[in-house]
Image 1 (cartoon, rainbow, N blue to C red):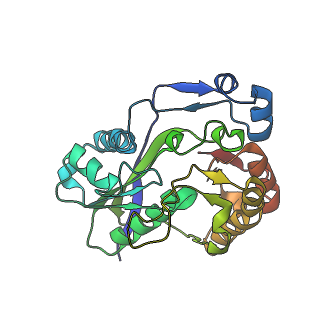
Image 2 (cartoon, rainbow, N blue to C red; image 1 turned 120 degrees about the vertical axis):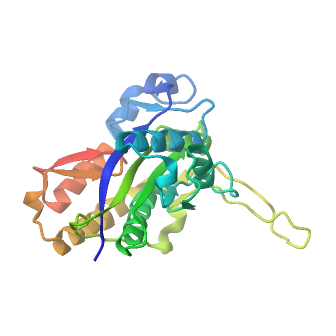
Length: 273
């Protein structure tokens, strides 16, 4: 049976940094209000780089670390909700940029869970025994998705990319996973609604900024994400006390603190990513 392993890790962020003090110049907020509620003091924002540009830099770093070329890759999976375009895929642009002309590539859209879903998908490709190497990248330019007059969302998001090189392994490295979705609460966090540009439709076309029901998202994270983490640990051959780190999607400090108490692993070093 084939197994998969993460052999390289890389990230890339745009050069420009926007602090909470910077945001206070354009909206009704201040550093104390933002940092006390989220733990966030600054974020990276892209002026000219696209989602594919950020992802390309990550891909180049991964290949350089591994000493391989794009032609050696079997696939590229790119998780994003801020693609360069709907077609071609952002992954296709990355493929062209790095010369991965033998790889199959596609975008995966699952918002906050996107990278985890992409990693799980890639692991299955490697485990099939048909593929040896692939890139999994999460890349976002969320600065173009937020309403910069809305402090409830704009203060939370920035731009950046991170990724891994997945390779075949003789040893099992992926021990357990818990993948879940709940479409019944889809309206709690939305972005990019669009209607139909058609003379045969009564629906008007309208695009939207990212909108969030903060309390609902907070409650969901504390309840359901904590449950998913517990389930993963229970299905793995390790105990919670064996873990050195928990790497979590960076929502905010209050969510991470409450989640640690919910899971009952306060001593574990929680790392927001």
